Length: 292
Image 1: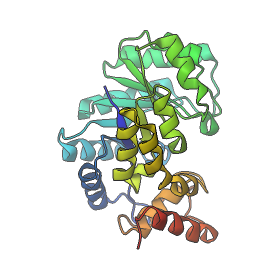
Image 2: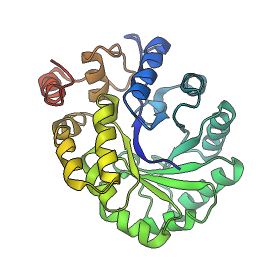
Image 3: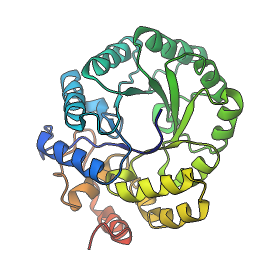
Image 4: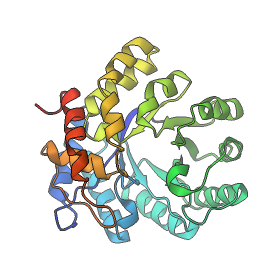
């Protein structure tokens, strides 16, 4: 259903931490103009963990309204409470999103059976395309390929964002699931290798600042031109690294502010990028021709 470069969109905030709907409007147009093939709203990069339910829904509502069908909109609706995830997923469906992204329950560390039952319950409760999201470095929970295979038999579970950093997961999941499920990397640094191994695209942090370049990398890789994809991706190599010098989305929001696209607002407990990293991020932006 989805492929290529899908941006894990930041949520613009003013310096006092309040939502900035004007900048969100500009960011949406920036991504449509520059080739992002889907927008993922209020995922973890969008600071979903610190938004109220009302804010969460307001951001989704604005993105869906403004995109107006030009590209797909995927909403982050995961939670460590199954009931809350069902409620958020239903809200997102009612607002008109094309799919939802469901991070594994964080902190409570469910078993593989618990993960299976969690995702099955959401899929049965809300009839909308659903994408699993595995990011064990942030959730202390790893959705294993065998569990993914069980979930792939559920009709409206259509994909997985695999952000473990383990490239072997692509071949493991494909061997177990065949074509039942689409695979998207959540690690910007392995886009080319992930797609060449059989993945369908990326849900990208780097695309926030370099949407056209990330789209070009994906297009070449999906066309089977590994050499061309790697050549373009080499322009982004420094960005892929520096945008994770501190916890996401701290560096990427600072980079977007440096580019003049958003204010410097971020919500506690996240803080502004440490001054010691400013020059590194500037140099990475310059290397990608995103700053003069």
